[in-house]
Image (tube, rainbow, N blue to C red):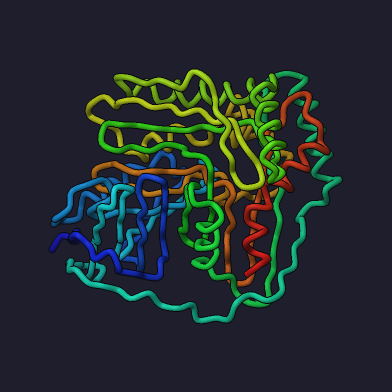
Length: 404
């Protein structure tokens, strides 16, 4: 049987397509169109990530350009639930561009049983529906009921057994026409140009948080935990950033996440280090404490998906310790997160890739949009303050969705 083939060539810089999958970071942007192959991961998906490597290894690669993100690339938006199944898609066409200006196109063509590869230029197509006009928004759970869940979580934490749990609120939007995921992605790019922006299977977002990336032997993560609202006034925001850095509650919450990420990655590394102190990163209507963790992988280097499976979920989106926190989320949250706060990103046949934490995100399905906003709850959390934080975080997507 003929092996599937992927051909990578240097690309014309003016080569637009209408994406069905995309991931953009400050270092590299990959944009895919069509679906050459879908890779299914049985439940639990964390135990079957090697199936992606096996599928990508089955391609015959003809690369004029050799760099991370060339050759066959799989995009995925994986469930928050580690015990669920998942799928990743290999687009028919992938355009890549780096921050240094290198550009390429990888093309996979053919039937399901005998794909072949050629190079081609696709023109961007326009959406086949009119813009959204009216949008209604509802919370799937009343604010009072959600605050009661936060209060219950603080009591459980105070009783011992865990130090933090992340609880999220779900909002549902219904429009008079289908949402256009490409338009949502474009608007997010305009508003949040430095965020990790993504589109996979109708899951769209602009996350501030890098779960993990692997480029050759270099591994990076930038965990975030600890949040303060932004006002848009520079002096006030600087004052709040200083308060965030000085907050013992937020620094303790942040350090838990840093330690977990560092200790999880360390067994794969010959060298690994974290910044000595966190910085404050702006993320639309809020700002977060963030710390870069960077190192060099030992040989043989693991695929980025192996690192994703080991890290997810970090304490920033689940809690700590992991198992009792996840159990408490299931008991108190009252909603299926789906892909929210799950890993979203890409992986190539060499195991390179970049994966964000799927926050500041929305799942689009025709005229319906589901989005979540989460907060880290500790023993002394104030339910009203946590409710206000969910509203601030939700604004990132609401400001885009209600203005379409």
